[in-house]
Image 1 (cartoon, rainbow, N blue to C red):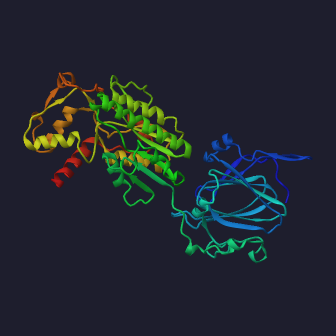
Image 2: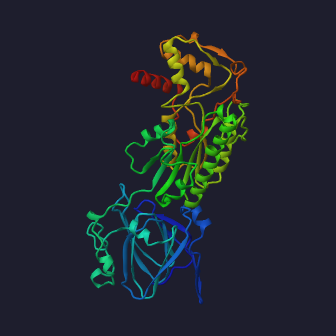
Length: 474
C-alpha cells in the first residue's frame, strides 16, 4: 500500500464521542517524506482539544500481526504511525451512554487519531517494522496502571474483525487474559470538585447536582482553602473542574484590620492557589464574583467594564477575578444580591414583616436579586455546554429595583403592607456608622448569559416562590 501524499489537514468524527480521526499532510519526493505529526496551532484551530501532551511514546513492532490492547488509560492520547501500517480498534470503556461503542480504521503515516481518557486503544500491525507513536498528557507511572480499564481483544460484544485472526496473531499473555465486556468496570468520569460546599451557593450546588456521582463536595473542614495540604494531598488527575463557592463576604468587617487580612487570604491568596492548581492540571476553574468589583456609577455593568472597586471586599473580589482570568479554562460568574438558604435580606425582611416592624431601608442602591438555585443552574449550564470561557454576569431577570422596593415586595407577599417600608438614602442609613462603601448601581447586563441559551428566570417570580417555600417551612 503506497502512502498518499499532500492530503489536506482534516478532521473526521467517529461513532465514539471525542474520538477524532485526522488526515495529515505528508510531503514526499525521491528522498522520502516529511510530515507535521502534531502541530498545536493548526490542530487546535481544527477542533483538537488543547490537551497539553507531556510524554511521547513509541511502540516498535518487528512483525506483521503483532496485536496489542485493548487498554483504556487515565489520560488523553494522540496516536499516529511513524512507519508501516496498522489496523486500529477503539472501544469506549467510559461510564456513560456510549459505553461499548466501537470504531476501527486502518492507519498509515498520513493519519492520526485523538483518543480521550477512558477509550480503549488496540492495534494490529499490517506490515513488518511498524512504529506506533503516541503523545499523552500525563506521565506514565506504575501507580497509574491501577487506573487502567481493559477489554479482551476477542470480546464477542465488540466483535472486532481483526484482519489477521487472533489465533494467527502475536499476543501477550496479559492481553489474552483481559475480561469480556460484561465483566468490565467502566472508567468513571473525571470529577467536578465544589469547594465551600456548605455555604448558600454550595448548598444550591448540592441540590443542583443531587445524585450525580461525578461531582464531589467539600466543606471548609474537608478542603481548607488556606492550607497547602488541601492542594497537595489530592490526585488532581481525577478531576476536570473546580467550582469555588467559598468566599469572605462580610463587607463591613472587611474594613477592619482583622477582616482585611481574612478577606485577602480567602478571596485572593486562596484563589491564587486554586488558579495555580487549575493551570498545572489543565482544569476548568469556576469563580463566583460580585457586583462590588464596580463603583456603581453606571446604570448597568457589562463584562467589559474596567474594575473599579470601592472597598476592601470589592478590591479582593476584583483581585480574585484578575487572578482567575489567567487560567486558560475559566468561568468568572459575576453576580449580585445573593439569596439562598441561610441568613439573607429577604429572610430578614420577612421576619420583620411577621413581627409588625416598620423598617427604614436603603432606596438609592439599585440592582436585581440572584437566587442561588439559578446561579447553580447557570454554572452547571456553562460546564455542561462547554460555553466559551470567560466572564459572565448573572442575576435573575426583571426590572431593576432598590432594596426598599424589594423590602416592600417582601412585606406585601408576607401579608404586610408596602407602606410599612420607609425609604432612606445610603448616606443617611449609614450616618455615624462604620460601614464599607457600596456601589449605588449594581444592575448587571445579562445579554452574554442569555447568549449561551440560558434563561435567568424572573426575580419577582423567584421571590414569590422563595417566600412561599419559607412560609411552608415555618
